[in-house]
Length: 447
Ligand code: NCD
Ligand code: ZN
Image (cartoon, helix red, strand yellow):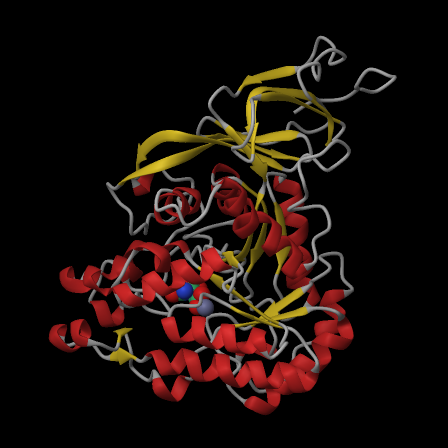
């Protein structure tokens, strides 16, 4: 233990299982880092320590979400950096990447720096801005990536998400440029010519229900193309929200070729399939669409094997009038931040596909590594930044949209009872969420 007593805000977590393994132990946090681990960890903690009795709970590194829509600026009626940060903290996240499809689009350093600054003011989670690849997400002209990368928000990931960078020449240039800048391009893989008018997965269910189909090939053809473009550019490419068995096969092939390609899967594509469409409830409308049970199985297996690198929420708040309407007219997207851990527990842990160390890998370590965050997804060891999440693996809870911190309520898990719950989230040693309440920092004082 240290020679001097710990100063500043200190937190002592007692009787916790690190990564869900071994014997319960104590972890002392102070000055934003892990100060001590072990039975005597609390010895020097001083009188002001906040003690958490974490018996039966699991400690993991805080989660990192590579794909979040926070809707600020432009659609603050559905989410703000404030409300989205609370949702993130409650979901166990210590860093999120806010997608660029805001209004105005985050294709300039003015917007990306605003997003970063606002996130820091709120103080519940690090909100990293994603910059647009092309001006206005129009796919025609590269945005000023270098300027955004060197701004205060230090943009390290670029994506036209919501839209595919469909022009192969623009994508090729973006990849070349990104590798010289040392940033990541994340692709929303959707060949737009194959999805004109599409609202649901192309298959027997959509055919029967009379919904226009979004074929798997629209995703897979772009994944294959971009793997080849990344190979030739010597660049890295990241695939957003992988949704088909074929994408998993293509990822396996590309990795085998030594191509630098990574991919994420959303919680909803790990749990739900297109049988949900029977009700025509647009809460189930999302891009890419909910696929078939065989795709769900392949995505789970791909995540377990590491072919799909990580889980990203694609948290996509939408206003009631944009969801509670005719299926074809509704906007695609669903909430995800507060339910992600529970869906991963249900689909991957309860099924025996991942243990809790595996959850740390797919929800924290891999996403942090993919985007190059050196303070997140770190091992739980003395001296490391105290970005952490406590989980009660035995808790069960029932989802109610209006109870979630998001402004919008479009959760596909309404009234479902889910396993596992985040009890506490800690950002740089400060508790940001505890027992279902976000804890906003107290300014100029102790939080
Ligand atoms: C996202 C949104 O609403 O911004 N919608 C969605 O269905 N996933 C955009 C996106 O991630 O493609
Ligand atoms: Zn997308």
